[in-house]
Image (cartoon, rainbow over all chains, first blue to last red; front, top):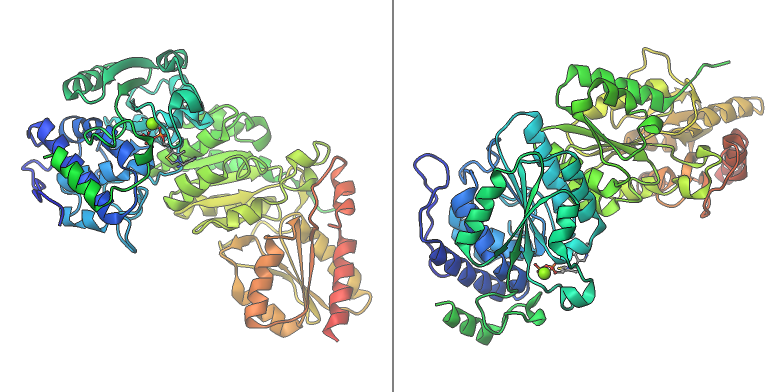
Amino acid sequence: MTPESKNPSSMPDGLFSSREDLKEVARRLRRRIVTIIGKAGSGHPGGSLSAVEIVTALYWRVLRHKPSDPRWPDRDRFILSKGHAAPVLYTALAECGYFPIAELDTLRQLDSRLQGHADCCVTPGVETSTGSLGQGLSFAIGAALAGRLDSRGYRVYALLSDGECDEGQTWEAAMSAAHFKVDNLTAVIDNNGLQLSGRVRDIMNLDPLGKKWEAFGWQVSEVDGHDINQLLDALEKAKNVKGQPAVIIAHTIKGKGVSFMENNVDFHGKAPNAKELELALKELA
Amino acid sequence: MVEEVSLRETYGKVLVELGRENPDIVVLDADLSPSTMTGYFMKEFPQRFFEVGIAEQNMIGIAAGLAASGKIPFASTFAVFAPGRCFDQIRVSVAQSKLNVKIVVTHAGVTVGEDGATHEALEDLSLICSLPGFTVIVPADAIETAQAIRAVAAHFGPCYVRLCRPKLPLVYSPDYRFDIGKAVQLRPGGDVTVIAIGVMVTQGLQAAAELEKEGIDCRVINMPTLKPLDEQSIIKAARETGAIVTAEEHQEYGGLGSAVARVVARTSPVPMEFVAVKDTFGGSGKPEQLLAKYGLTARDIAGAIRKVIERKG
Ligand SMILES: Cc1ncc(C[n+]2csc(CCOP(=O)(O)OP(=O)(O)O)c2C)c(N)n1
Ligand SMILES: [Mg+2]
């Protein structure tokens, strides 16, 4: 069992609407993330930890969703384009009640519903399979266009990594979202400054990232991606943007919350060993 | 002369009919709508048509997102660009996610003609058939095209339909009925079976007619659905005629011939010959010249038949 198995799944109105303290939720998600990756013996802690506040703000305050009915047609959609950060999504989904928290312990095991990268065919609440970087924004645009055609009021959220902005498809998608005037779409970029083998700035410099998105026709805002209030403000403002898509560049720290993982490219795709896990949990107590 | 009709023209018109019947039909194109003929749909249903520009990867991703929210997207471009330019997007966003996306490509094979090698898809079937869950269809004429497009619209799941550039002679009469996964025997015969797809079906029929003069009784089967394959018709042909020739406008590697050979080897080994492109790219020329250059004519099929019958012993 993972620690703190509290499962707030049964909401009176069917919508997930916990009013829990979000800092506490974020702390719990971080503990679960390092625990399940440690148990699995492999996985991507860095990019999961950097996105904790973003995912917390969305799942606990912003998204209209029903954990008891993952395919509810009017749900807001969350697309984890950076599919290797599946642990942050899985822990949020489990905490919201999409599946039992105990199931988190099966991460990356044979026949588990929690595959190494998010797989929409097996995991309740996962909108599309990701893991090949750069594909999520296109999918999100399609989902947003379908919502517009059907006059459904839902909104689509896509979480991208900064590394994903190397991919041409991301910019094809960026261009087309503005061209189609998709305004029921918010992209959030987990701008943690690191990718797999080093610093974004050294591998493929993206600067000036905000200006690029602006030039592609997006409404851009920049926030501290670990400050939940800033995130909530920006997400709310993005909802009111008309006639164009909105992107929030969230400045984050890869590995956030565990000192020896922070800004450490070694923990992009490496599980903590038993001793490191113990240390991490102590820091996240 | 048999009437010749354009498969892609037919596709474009059937799309419009489908659009009128079902508001969930949407169409995407990557700056090729005058060639793929999705332009008809664009004119009638501008709200449900998405021109993504020259961006095939994005087109597939958007189609996936539309499908996941209940739309039936038809995404079209040339056969070289899908799957070629967006294979991973098809693999992950469509196939792995089991989404109801219809990829209809045109300008497959060397019959593209003058545009040459970059534009002549000869490996697309190999790529797309390797993806779990995909339905793969290669119509032989316009009548089969119209029905195949309707069939994939009605079928839930990822589908790939491969069309060619030139008009093709009609193989079927208007009362023909296409079913996904069903082969069609076009001509009975007991000495040998030709199994053909697409452009090669007419060539196969010609070869069979030619060999009748030599006293060879040749069965001809059209295999419009490459996946799932009609194994029973193959097994029956192998057992009853004892020799098989496959014919396709595609690389020998990984297309119709490979698929048929797998079934034959497993169930009823008989001699086989393969009429296909032999590990080379295409080139520029007139379609007929290129079919001749790459060994894809009725004469080539006839040659393969004689050879396989000799091996029968
Ligand atoms: C198309 C593609 N190429 C390569 C990879 C291998 N890969 C996995 S994660 C990653 C980079 C991670 O950095 P970033 O995208 O910035 O994500 P984060 O920092 O949020 O973890 C790479 C190259 C991949 N998953 N997909
Ligand atoms: Mg990064």
